[in-house]
Amino acid sequence: MWKEGTIGIPKEDGGYTACKYWLKHFDKPSVYGIDRGRISKLMLKIDGEVVCNFDRGWDIRPTSEDAEKALVILLHEYN
Image 1 (cartoon, rainbow, N blue to C red):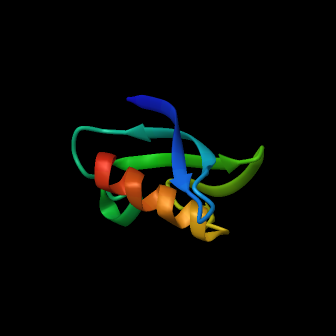
Image 2 (image 1 turned 90 degrees about the vertical axis):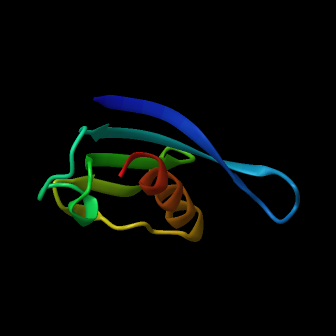
């Protein structure tokens, strides 16, 4: 199943960094998933730049702290 959305990552000044995501997940874990979990495809973008990409393997690991935070949130929710 495909999911798409935006995560607001809190900033120190009280604002948020918008992180857009697209992911494909399944009902059961897979050898192709992140950490052998349910997410088999994932893309994160911040300010139009791809900051993380997984397509049955890592193409781009998270490139910033905000990308890492968004990944943790999505892993908790879907993996």
